[in-house]
Image 1 (tube, rainbow, N blue to C red):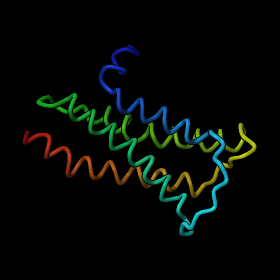
Image 2: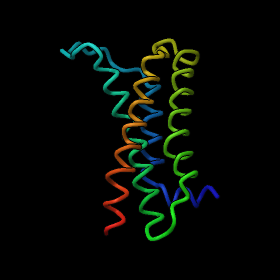
Image 3: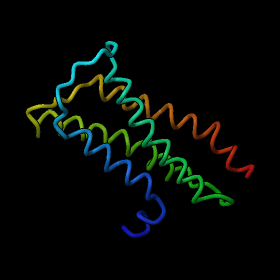
Image 4: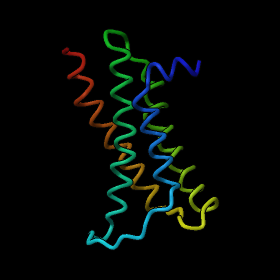
Length: 130
C-alpha cells in the first residue's frame, strides 16, 4: 500500500518531507527587510503548494476516469489542514526555538483552500481537455 502512494504521489510526498524539515529546523537569525506578516505568506504558499501538488497528481492519476471526489477532498484538503495543525502543535511542544500559532494554522488552511479552488476550477477542466 505504501509503495502505491510513493508511485502515485512522489512529488507530493517529497514536498511534504520538505515542509516537515522546514517546519522543524532551527533557522539562522538573519535580519532582512520583510513586511509584517511575511511568515504568514510563507505558510500560505507552503500549504497551498502541498495541496496544489496533491491535487495535480490526483487529477493526473485519475485522468479519463470518474473522480472519487471524497478521496480528493480527504487527501488534498482535510489531510493537509490536519497535518498543518499537527506541525503547529509539534512546533510548540517539541521545540524550544519555534512556536505554534493559530494565525499560522489559518494561513495554512487558507493556502489549502485557495489551491483546492484553483485545482477544481482551473486544473481539473484543463486536464480533462488534454
